[in-house]
Image (cartoon, rainbow, N blue to C red; front, side, top):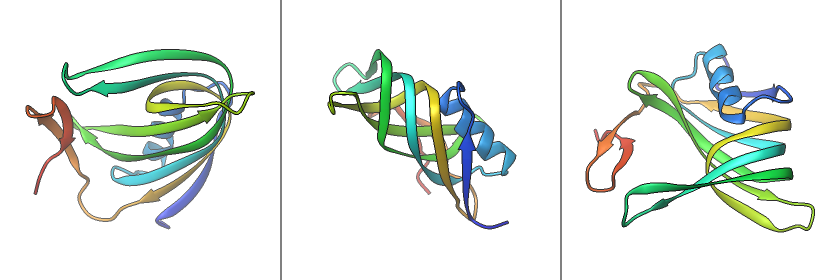
Length: 135
């Protein structure tokens, strides 16, 4: 299997589900990806360092994906997609943050499979986040 693939993502699908399904169909448990295209809605978050919680906000409308990158690893034995995204609206304003989900208008996934054992996410009490286990 080649270690780099390009996949078209289904219109109307949730972007994180579509990435997870593509990774599963390609048997990728460790990898890196980028996405280009457009979303019709999105849910973003940023991590409040003091409170150790994600602050969430939803946006509706047409958004061009200016940048979307992330990685694939394992959390609790399941594929976990971690992504950040920057989106442009019709007035060329940018919004962005930690990607929680979004409805695909059109999207293309570039995915790179990594060799070796996948990274595993475990709870880190210092940050309150699930981070890669240190080797």
